[in-house]
Structure formats: C-alpha cells, structure tokens
Image (cartoon, rainbow, N blue to C red; front, side, top):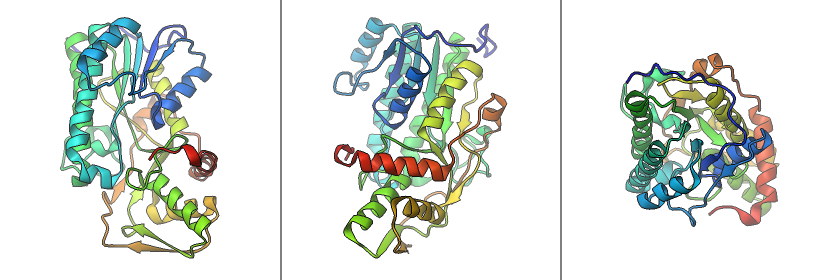
Length: 324
C-alpha cells in the first residue's frame, strides 16, 4: 500500500479519546496543557508507575481498555551528553521497547491519527546546515548519543512502514533542543540549557564569582520553548500528512557562550564564566531547516530570551519539586 491515502488533515474531534504517552514529561505535559486549552475533553494519560510502556502485555491491555482515537508518543528515556554517553544500552533498549509496544498496540486497536516525536540528534554529526529532513541516514551520527538516535530513527522508519503497509495517516516530528516548565534540571541528567540555569542559580545563591562550563562554548544550538513545540504538534496533526518526518524548530541558533550569557542575565549572575575545554562539545552545529513546517503553516512564537526568563521563573518557583 502506498503513502497516497484517502485522508486529509483536518480539525480533530475534541471529544474523542486522546492518549498522550509521557504526559508528565517536559514535552508530554506541555502537549497536555495545550490540548486542554484547545478544548480537548477526553485526554488520557498514565504515569510510569501505573503503566510501564516497556511491558508489552500491559500496553496492549491499556489500548484495549481506553481505545484512543488519537495518540502522541512523547514518552522516552532522555538525557544530556553525559547520560547518553554513559548509559547507551539503556537509551537504546528502553526507547525501542517503548516505541514498538505503543506503535504496535496503536495499530492493532485502530488509532486513527498518531504523532511520533523524535529528536534532532537523528541527523548526521556533520550534516549540512541547516539540516533538511532528507539528511536522515546520509552520514555518521554523533558518537555521544548514537544509541538514542538509532532508537528514534527506528521509530521514524516504523511510522513510514505503517503508512506503507496499512495506509494509516501517522506522522513523525523531530524537535530541536527543547526547554521550559517541567524540564530535567538534575546535575547528571539534564541538557545544556537547564544545566546552565541550575549552575548559575546555584552560583548566585552561593555568592560565587566564577562559573565553569563544559567545552569551548563555540558549538551552536537551536532552542525551542516546549509550549511552542506543543502547539506545533497539534498543528501538524490537523494540517500535515506525509511520510517524511517534520523538523520542528525556530530556524535560528546561538552559540553555547551566547546561551550562557542569556541564562546568566535571566538568573541575575554577574560574575565571570570560564570554559573547561577538556570536556566534549558534541556536534559543532545543529540547526534545523524548518521549511516543511513553515509550508504546513506554523512558525515558532516565543523568543529565546523571553522563553529562558519564563523557564528561570518556573525553576525558582518549583525548586523543591524538581526531578533529580
């Protein structure tokens, strides 16, 4: 069966069961908030303590019971460079289990519309910038997170295979670096932006006059506020149907040094910053080409400085309840 199917994207039924896998995570919680704001009345979510997505039998039983019409697969084991480089088996195995179980159960139980969320790390380390969707599988991955990337690539291919074999209008979206309320600010498991927020906030609280960051500060990264990502997800579900994964980002990037300065300003840190060049930088640049997303009619709306300010406020307000 080809990808040409008798389905046109359109407004989703706000009363239909809508399962958000990973609804308590950074992305999933933002998607949940956005769907509530958009009038969805039958949202379904299960915490990992109530449903282990790595348990295939339990996942199939859950789908049989709840019968969701729509699904966003935002559940994943995620982490920064250190975590990915230290525990590659965990990132590969757990993400593959989650994806295969949810996608297979969704297919068996007739999910009409499904969005699989990946990561921009699926693209080759030295892909031409900005990175187009067709750069997938054209070069070597960044070694520090290749296991996670391979798992996400497998998810994209499974979505494409379902489209070909079963004709279902399922899609994939690949967000750039995300940040915002609900992020992981732990010292060992966080990505660069929340790690910087925690580091500079702790420096302010301790009265420190110098902060040392990893690497050279020269790599360039693109950052998207998670509320923008959530809005993009619903937009794609209602306006896009195609086999290619869709890049979701802002179309602009900053150096890590520039990001550190933005964070320092937002936190109120006025001391010195130094760089430990013995630590890895990761990919030199990772900027997504968002032409396909723009063609589908969506662009980001939250500027980085404003988004970081909001995130710092959330971090300070939730300091006692942060994930470790």
